[in-house]
Image (cartoon, rainbow, N blue to C red):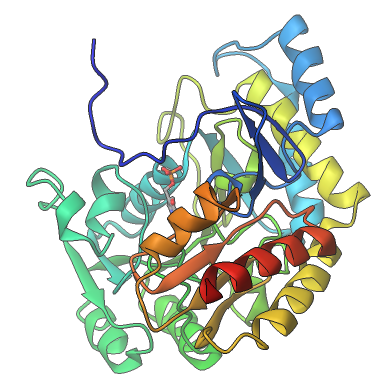
Length: 376
Ligand SMILES: Cc1ncc(COP(=O)(O)O)c(C=O)c1O
């Protein structure tokens, strides 16, 4: 049976990975500055992660959400401690889109309204409400287009005010650093005013931290660079270091009711074991400090390269903007220098999303290759 052909693929077949490196079937080593799209947080095959997942699967990999699962509570407590978000409750699911879908659904339940405000170049996933809030017409099917969504420009605070005052908006959803779109950020003033406007208009403020969360921005959550209090925070990618897990942190002003949300696989034992070991490693190895240190090191070198016109993003969610489209450069980096990087909707942007364990020697390896590729 052929595979449904939706992905343009690079001709590389990884069979093994360790730390910041991935290996193909010929044992060729690739430096992974893409992290499988910002998923690999604590490094590939981290021994503590492998041990935790292996131990759990030999005991109990899965049982349904109809029984007690203390691992879910342990995970919630650890997220609370590491993130400093002390006033939230946790619902677990399996992916980023599902996290945002549940967040939007809760906002609609809570406010009894249904229009959503989202932003230009934003990406929130491919399920129905999440994709409708995504600024990409090519991935919105007619069935999704039934959702009521208004897309505004980042920083258009007058537009947000005007729309919220109409009284029918259940949620404003935002990426504090846009991922797929190309690492744009609104101003602190904008984020803080949106937060206040949401609170004044019975609208929930949803922080999509699917990509920017779990330390990648240099703080546990990217919204923590600002003085805002989201009502719902969605998480996924870095949470399981590759094990599919997502979730939402929910402000307790939103009251839970039996059956309001639910999932078969979400929060299963194996996912929780993976999630717990990720948080343990982030804490034990001080990975958020490493993010800030490596980010500063990376940016310092990037600034010395004349072909780089702009450096975007924060922490280890970075973008290098050129005055040409980077498709060929990415191919050259993969095939000639064995380095994975990311692309974005902004075709002139090279995205850098390494495991949070990346070191200076990896960054040096990248820049040596990049300078060579740019000049030859
Ligand atoms: C900010 C953001 N939200 C949501 C998603 C969707 O996550 P998933 O692919 O796990 O459904 C992504 C994926 O790239 C993302 O970057």
